[in-house]
Length: 112
Image (cartoon, rainbow, N blue to C red):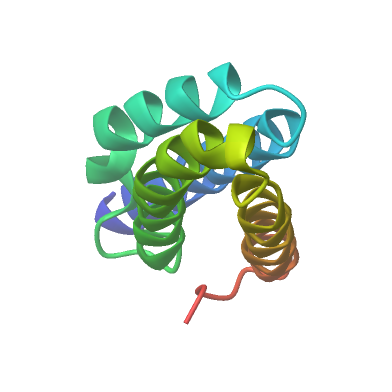
């Protein structure tokens, strides 16, 4: 019985992980899905505790906070043209972390 519950929890955590990475890819074009994904990641990360997907939830939340702490000041600096290269690098960083995480999640491997 306990093994079935563990397998079931891993499957649910996998599904949430893939869904949240999908929201992050949408967030590359508009920021709102990333906020929604972060809220859901905080809400559902208990499901992933003890599974290979636990590190994916940590990655998703790290990407959110770095994006927020770097993206907001960079957006405010766009009127000086300094913010545009910062936003471009942030875009590439989010794309890299999300792509790497998605492929590792699809393979059933932890993020780290």
